[in-house]
Image (cartoon, rainbow, N blue to C red; front, side):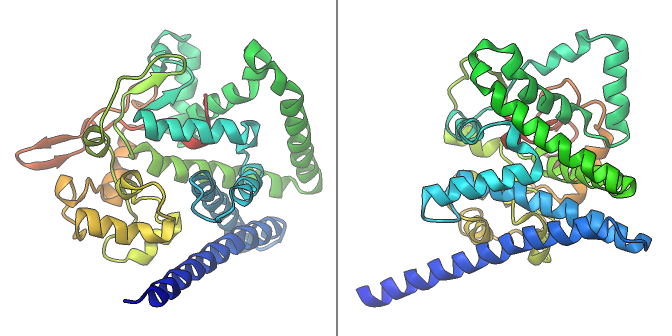
Length: 344
């Protein structure tokens, strides 16, 4: 292949990548706007569709934050940062700054650990009524622990002297977001309640896949993490796609489930992850486990998420046991938050 042909092929690939990203970004805004509008209509099916579109647009916005952090959408860093911040304001992750979110996520890759704001094991020392309330809400599929972590992000500028410079910014964001919620409730209480429902669904759907991406040991913010290598990273990283048989269904999460491939090379954009996974780990055939690149089936993931939804609170992420009989998830407790949206 000549240099001119190689250059032409490279340019075609870049244009194709840009088109795919633009289509997905347009979908985020189209789904969000139409979803909000449908929350106000009379037919129940319109409200249901509106809630689904709103929740899914917030989910895709979150995946795009991840893409913008890694600079895999635009060549310009400034564009990636700008649109990343737009997505943060869309889905409510904006109480953290862009630098906090990006630094936190890159530390996750570089240090090969999950940084947390406090040791989750202290949950057992909480007052019984608080612990029971959190567990009851989690039993009802309300992501209460995720909101505790978000509350820490919001309140930390008023508690931690090192973050006091963020107080005005936090108050401004809280005021404008609270104002929008109050306005929505005044215009239509039904639309307000449906939006809250859609937001709960978005957080739960996002947390579903994030829960089973790693069995890294937690590191409390401020502590020095243990040194880990790439072998540890891949052994404790798991891919959880929606479907192996029908790959197009994985676009529901913008291929976010191909997590081993992402950790193998974090510069690859979302639309190239399936091919990267295939080239590195081989063809996924439904034989889940290490032989398939640490694949977890969607139904394995959902069943474990359901079974351990209260036991997960206050525990480490657990481990996946590889026995003679195959791949076991009985000790895969999983995480409790969407890590790259809630930096400690």
